[in-house]
Amino acid sequence: MKITSVKITPVAVPDVPLLNTKGVHGRVFLRAVIEVETDTGLVGLGEAYGAKRTLAGLQATAPTLTGLDPYNLRDLRARVEAALPNGGGVNAPTALADHQVIDVVYSAFEIACLDLRGKEVGRPLHDLLGGAVRREIPFGGYLFFKYATLPDAIGPDIFGEVITPDAMVEQARALIDEYGFKSLKLKGGVLEPDLEIETMLKLREAFPDHGLRIDPMGAWTVPTAKRVADALDGVLEYLEDPVRGMDAMAELSAQIDMPLATNLVVVEFEQVIEAVKKDAVQIVLSDHHYWRGATGAIHLGEMCRAAGLGVSQHSNSHLGISLAAMCHVAAATPNLTYDSDTHYPWYAHEIVKGGRPNFVDGKLPVPEGPGLGVELDHDAVAKLHQIYLDQQVIDRDDTDEMLKHVPDYVRKVPRW
Ligand SMILES: O=C([O-])C(=O)C[C@H](O)[C@@H](O)C(=O)[O-]
Ligand SMILES: [Mg+2]
Image (cartoon, rainbow, N blue to C red):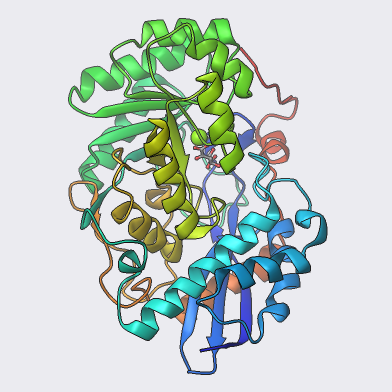
């Protein structure tokens, strides 16, 4: 089997004004849909960030993949490196962490190659990753403070404005009622720390048995984070990226018992070693979009096992190809023992056939069809591509978006 052509389709999906440390989501989020064709007639699928740097990296690499054997991931890596001298620019496609574009591009094509291999041998992707240890993948409810949508919104609002602890409890209740989630993650760093402490305590009171987490993406100083950790002692299963940078995480970690998790200070294999040496984190969030695909995410799981670290799974706004890949990675990572993050409930669209999957008790069954186990709905992709063309949004800039809601907004990290 050899690759004959690669098609990259940017799509824009209606989004809602979800708040985070950097600002707020705009009216659409961007993804790139990848179709890799082969001389056997099989087509492998992938899904990546769709903001301009990733898209440029994908487009520059695509023509160089002709003739690639999807079983040779080292050749894939060599071709991606050759197509993207200087790593494709070191800045993050989502501007949230320093993920190299090169890793993001490699990861997207790696998933497509694995999809092809699974389709060729008629086995689900998790079988190619070492086999499933679980057939149902538990996800957590991802809570966001949010504004009501602006007049230029192109999709329906969900929950309207949510900027108080009580409103957040109602958001959580609605998500639990609809999806059955057994754990909740709050995107923090948005309100003052005392209000976010109050929010977590109210969530604990309302949902006594749910696993709880908060992720302020480095919005706090070490003393503030220590104060929050003390106030939420025994309430959280982990605290995610409370402070900015490896050394600040290590400084905080030395002062508290609560486990620290990250998707910001450990985004490359070398950083796992540094984090262990400094005892900076106890849990690493895996993500096949930048941890060198699904095989890389499996390697990360093994490295964390050896180092005595826990593994959880990170998310960004995504569609069903990514959701399927997340399920396969979670199925085949024995020590991924936390409920995975997902932004899925925030969006109404889908690009795979069969539409949106049904979460039961917060879980999804791991797809059992060949490869990723999903098929592309070309009409749905065409509609979202048309939105991409119409909206003319080509990059993600949450800080810039924030100025539309709060004209004098100034981004500050740490803020408190
Ligand atoms: O765990 C995280 O850091 C994320 O989920 C990153 C996302 O980009 C989130 O902050 C968002 O969607 O605003
Ligand atoms: Mg995070």
